[in-house]
Amino acid sequence: MKAKTKITGDWFAGFVDGEGSLGIAHHGGMYVQPRFRLNQRDDDGEIVRAIRHFLGVGYLAKKQCDPKTLYYSANAKPQLALNVSGKDCLAIVRVLDQYPLRSKKFREYPIWRRAVLDYAKNQGGRWLDPAIRKNRDKRMLAYKKKLEAIRVYRGAR
Image 1 (cartoon, helix red, strand yellow):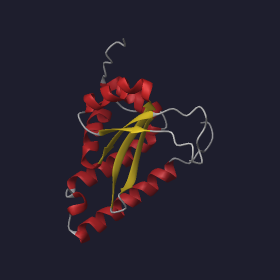
Image 2 (spheres, helix red, strand yellow):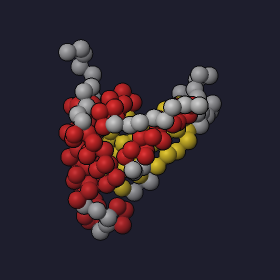
Image 3 (cartoon, one colour):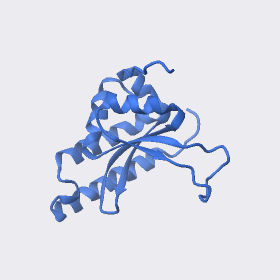
Image 4 (tube, one colour):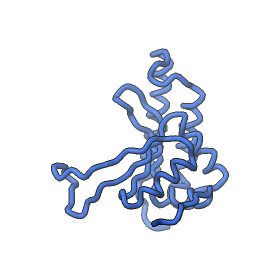
């Protein structure tokens, strides 16, 4: 039996540095919003569930390994994924504002944070007035472009 996983803000920030993904994503092809994701092999699912409990947001999804995909390998194992999107990302902002990232994600975080705050102040999701949603989506895509630009590998520093 495994020991109960206790998540703290500092531990979470370190885990995000190594395993988390901050991004801007199209959802259902209808709208663009901030998202946070992390995946772990399903035998480490307790950690993913503990993080979900710590944050109080997001949904868990089991990811199967499909041998028909281009990137399949014999070593691939099923995973448990935590997905957080839209205004729910504010929970992650609250933690990471208090417990800063230390890896290369430290440079990504301010851009992603601005996207989360921008998205959260313009509530309505896909049901928002189409003109307002179009402008918001345009801003989200601009944040996404900035994130992609900062992720370019420039060699050791």
